[in-house]
Image (cartoon, rainbow, N blue to C red; front, side, top):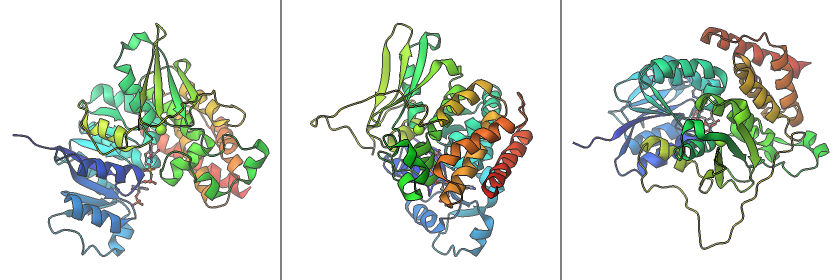
Length: 386
Ligand code: NDP
Ligand code: MG
């Protein structure tokens, strides 16, 4: 008998999570949301639960959950709280696929738990691979868990790679919109306001990744993500600015053929591809309108304007503890910028100086990565207070 694929949507109230909910609701019963999680937006979580009737909802902020009135939650939906509740839910028999849509390194433990439990993880939370790439790779080699990319660039690479053999890949080219400041005079960047940085030209995303796109730290994180996801050396990874965000990335093979994946900038497509993999289905995402003329432009990134890119390559080369330190420093620096405590142009220099100061280790344990994550956040705090 046909049974739907059971999906846990982690971070269901966020940008990726809401798109995931739409993909599941539009799947004609092929996908079922069995677990939905939220950290603070519980009213939306309750509305989603009323619509999708999952088995379990998880409220990760336990204190906020205790203060919330859950009377709208449908009777048969179980409520669990806290980060241990989250781990328990992803490991449960109600779950085949985990859509990892929690933002930041807060999403790390749930991804590791899902992989350990043999689940398929549809990974939006790139910070997991950036911080703990070596540990995730080790886990994938020894557990039945699988990782499928949701980040649009990595989904594009994953699809394009299917046109050749691994050893036939000459390089991969990650595309980047260039964000809102691609053409601004350099001297104006210091004065960038939070609202200006949050106005992304092509993608509608959560605040953290939107700021990362403006600094191009997002591309730095994606270089590191590609390094671990596809086991590629940094030398085989390139970045090109593509302002239209229609070509999501490209693979160049050794014969010179280049295979690209194209679609409008709409996360519902890479989410659907990962949730339905290996099948393609008609879905809910936007389609290109071939009745209209359109242009596709590409240019190499200006490394002076976007110093984050060099950091991404440095960390992809170094591995070890460097990704965890870069990621945590960046999360804290972005938070400080959003709170008006750091200039836009200080985000990347703060990350660089913390990365350079950190006691590098080539084969860290998870505990050590978490210690350095906390240390890097504290260093940003000292930078802000200096
Ligand atoms: P959002 O800020 O929109 O959503 C984040 C989600 O995580 C929310 O559901 C939030 O809950 C939850 N959350 C926040 N903090 C915690 C915590 N400490 N513990 C548990 N849950 C928490 O982010 P996005 O959806 O934009 O991004 C999610 C991830 O996907 C990021 O890693 C991002 O890099 C990646 N990604 C996003 C893309 C996009 O288009 N948005 C594209 C490619 C990758 P609540 O809202 O209830 O507080
Ligand atoms: Mg991306």
